Image (tube, rainbow, N blue to C red):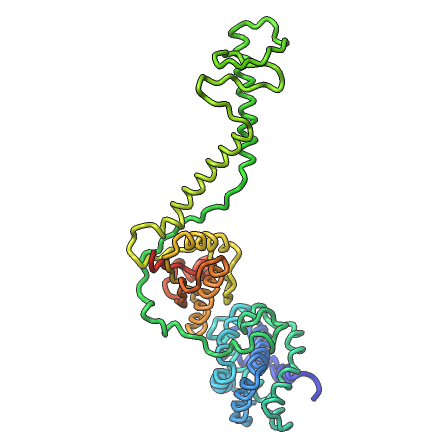
Length: 429
């Protein structure tokens, strides 16, 4: 076998074929050409991932043996090919099919329905090429695994391999193709299995995130400078009032509390305090300012996340988690959410009897078969983060809410970004 199987498939996608596919889905040939170029290596990547285990390869082999090769090569009939490909891709790619479709849609600018048609058109061509190798070489499951694995280099080096494909296939990086994460293609638990929780949510409460305390060096230095300026002013006006004849003479240090004229020697000594009032050293001033800062932070915390755990609102109470958001098709927490979850973890440890439910959400892009397991994984990500910060896992429940209950307009990029989030519901305090 010379060349890669990808090249064999791409040779069938002539400009005439591209034009017919474009006409069947109502898109421009330029867009369709780009989408087809991305779809071919993406589908191969999905098949490599599915066929990277003995069980997965056996399932693919069974599907390939049922393929009628006489019906899958007619590229002059895009609609007919799409009908065949839709059934084939569903059985052979499973969850990967919908996820790859979303990636193609996002990178090509073609709507999801059109991208699904392109995927369905290409799939029979790919299945036919692989099936021909299986039949001519008499391959079994292990042989199919080797055949698919041999295409990995061509997939990774393909110039049109789209970004974000690793997330769609459940792997950390495309270089892990056919290795880590190969079992992720198994069906996830659907949110329908926890349907009793999918009720109209209580009002969503937004609480501020307490800032991390910082050493108040700026405030301390500013206070010292201001004190020196005030002291100099007091000395100047005191001298004018008493008409001190020798302004450059060094006055002795006065310790009596009833003396009102302070010493004039540099560095200036603090003015005498009224009877009964202690004079603070710079160290004492620093401790006092730090104590004020700590008191202020404690007050902020009590009125922020902690107030949700100590309030009298009816339970369950929904609490928004500021900045706990996710990128498209990803369950990795964005960096801005760490501070919020640190605040939640500290507060939950301060209230050991409290229990919460973390609800994961998606935007409206993609179908429920994709969004439901994705939202569940986002909720699990938040739970793992809280457990990593010291919260008992038994105190945290998770549920995926898919695209339900959006907090912003899914018709805009900003709105969709806000909807890719996780909320917290306080179950008990």
